Length: 94
Image 1 (cartoon, rainbow, N blue to C red):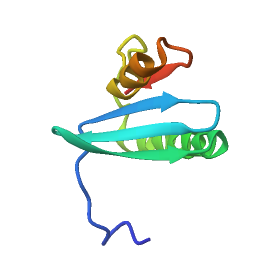
Image 2 (cartoon, rainbow, N blue to C red):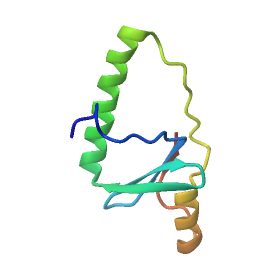
Image 3 (tube, rainbow, N blue to C red):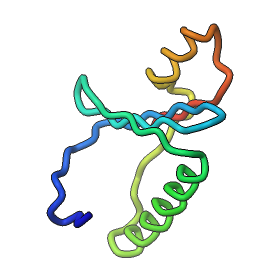
Image 4 (cartoon, rainbow, N blue to C red):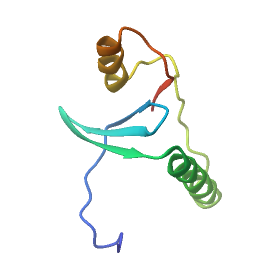
């Protein structure tokens, strides 16, 4: 895929839910969004890839000022918890 010519859509928020088999990554735009399911191994590689690219970006452009709050529940996980009767797995919203 050529990222220079690929269509782009601004993502306002990202939510992540987990199960033993996969990670669900929801990318939200207004009242809609797209969810992607990936294996734990692919999620780990994505984390490593983003971490590397963020370090390179900050070397060139300066530190990115952003804070993640792990106590913000994701709508994806809240729906799953309501259907299963409780939260069994971690949830992270960014």
